Length: 325
Ligand code: NAX
Image 1 (cartoon, protein in one colour):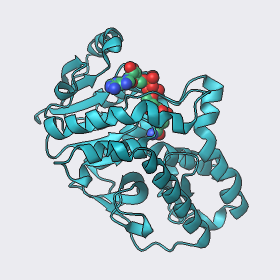
Image 2 (cartoon, rainbow, N blue to C red; image 1 turned 90 degrees about the vertical axis):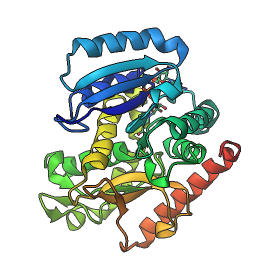
Image 3 (cartoon, rainbow, N blue to C red; image 1 turned 180 degrees about the vertical axis):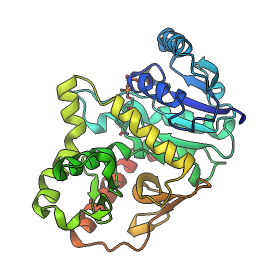
Image 4 (spheres, rainbow, N blue to C red; image 1 turned 45 degrees about the vertical axis):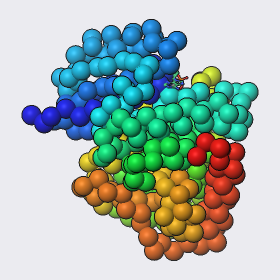
């Protein structure tokens, strides 16, 4: 039996947490033979609700869950953490712009970044889900000074999964047949899906899809899916976001076995993206958990414009929070 790993989840009493915790506890993320200790962080007013979530987790009697800690103390929640899901923050509501989220959520990631740096293991892997997730990740990264860039990531996997679903629907194949779809840039409506490597049942999809659809309806649908779900459900994506967070962390933990996926990570200058910007790239993850950007792709004018639009958007987001870095 492997030794348990410590998995921290912030915002654990929230909507995404309610789905994410069950996915993680069942072994879907870290493997069916990997015991875990859940370390759940909430703000003080939500501790009672968290207590209810923990009671339900206990009642699920997951064999892999060796202990569950619920707390409003970040140092305790991140103590010796091997993996961290930064979910806790305010979701965008119908009346909010994305820019309102900076004011509401940026400062959370200063404190949590410092606390991760002080308390988590030096090998910790952090995924940032709380929006605006790329820039929140940048803030957390900047405040965890002792940790390497490679410890931090933000989630564009939901955008990728949305893109996969649209391509699968168009081609009339199950989503599992579609691989190597990836996203450039920011988790926002500027994100740029790229199908140049994508395959369905092992065959390239590029020649089989109408370019007007790819550049028009497809991109528009993926870009605005979050908003469409808020309008339809009255609250933002939760179960699909939790599933995407698990996909991201599972691939980081267990490797992608050659598949290409999207992860937003601190740039080292790849494809002209300024160093340090947390930007979604096509990546592969090796068995040791090293994230490797797929380099040398041919970038046509359309994709170049998409990459540049996202650089500008993220530089603009960064300019709002330089005091938090
Ligand atoms: P909820 O409001 O249901 O839950 C958020 C939870 O976070 C609440 O229980 C709240 O008490 C807690 N919280 C707030 N501040 C905290 C802090 N400082 N420390 C710890 N916990 C804190 O929102 P939910 O639907 O779960 O969404 C969470 C975040 O994910 C939002 O920012 C949302 O915008 C973001 N999303 C990100 C997505 C992505 O693809 N990156 C997609 C889904 C989602 O929109």
